[in-house]
View 1: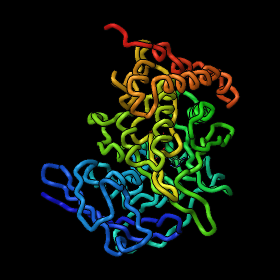
View 2: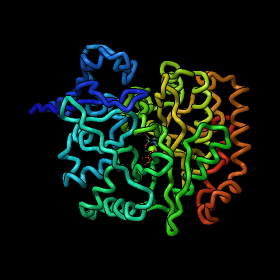
View 3: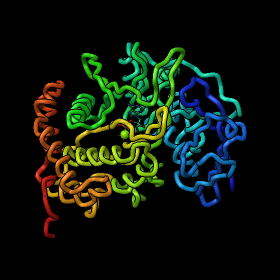
Length: 420
Ligand SMILES: Nc1ncnc2c1ncn2[C@@H]1O[C@H](COP(=O)(O)OP(=O)(O)OP(=O)(O)O)[C@@H](O)[C@H]1O
Ligand SMILES: [Mg+2]
């Protein structure tokens, strides 16, 4: 049986606190289980001087109907503002329904209004009045306990869920919530029961190491709760102004690469292709391509192999798209000694995280081989000090030893492809 669902797409206009209807999205599910999404901007939106295209290539400002079959019929630029594994779990918990009973549109409609970027969704043509309730940092213990209960499939009383829920629609798999303090909005990443180490502190130390390597990294701090830590990341898609928060557009590299999110369908998951994408999207393509190269080298050098396309994003601040600050950088220790793969293709030798592969497509990032090698040498020189840096960030000796096999493994330094 063919069925159809729809949602209005609202946008908070850039540089303002005003949210207006932008488009209508209809998704048809065909009898074979595939989906066709149809997206059309509203005429009133198109007539606005401040109207922006949600995706300048797949969704340019036009009264045309745009069709999508990837990502269950949801345009990438819309999907990027919806929750992922964690936020979906909270929605399923709230609705007391399993993923099999929920449509992609349900996840758009039931996410709280703190989603990534400047979009929100609803059933009516006019957007609902904005709710300005955010979790506050003094509730952290309660929020962590509620997140753990949800992760373990235990029911959370409605009152607590109501408090946790307003901040849970950002993407990613780990438990997290949007939190507000006197300085603005933060993404708080919580501990999970299955963690093998203090991941919040390790991620914090890795972000600080990346910053020392010269990468543009999300602003972070740790909130020490005595028995655990919360990693606080300043929301780069929000800015506190008088009367509220400005919201900035955000697309993941899935949208820039125009590809699916399943690792089974990863032909286009590639750093060189992403560099090509930056040349089309970015307002400062040359600088962003060089920054992307540094991020790829850093990920290879610390074995951050969870560098999938949702872990790279572009941000639309006041003017044009730019690579967002780097986030979600975590070394993965227990892997092969001979070879490590990243999630994205690195160069001519596939996903291999070794110097010969990192240098093989340097030109795609706008770098000569000599310039690329210099970038690698500079990054490696900083990472060699990682133990002192991690220690200074309060990572305990046990966790440093646990992480050690991930940092600068021998196979990273290979200058040529090993004989097979
Ligand atoms: N500082 C930030 N400001 C705004 N949005 C952010 C920020 N950091 C991350 N995000 C968004 O939130 C999402 C989830 O964050 P993050 O990747 O750190 O979580 P995660 O659960 O560890 O992810 P994964 O499932 O990849 O392990 C990101 O994909 C990105 O869209
Ligand atoms: Mg992530």
